[in-house]
View (cartoon, rainbow, N blue to C red):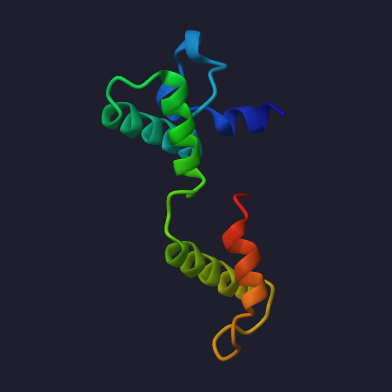
Length: 106
């Protein structure tokens, strides 16, 4: 457990006793703050609750067009097939898989 803790420490904080147990940030967390920052600068005068909601749906890609979501879903299906050992080069992508991926927000 101690090895895991040491591996997860922010390298810039080693040696600073006040920050010994501070968690490091992840790309996912920083991305969320970047979305919120963009929304609060864009929607000047909007309430913080509204800004958080808009940032959240932006992270979920709800504002993307259908074509963009379908293209991303096709690419995800191809990656998944490659990862699981299937061939994606010549086989047609199953549109039911693409539909399922393009409508899920997870």
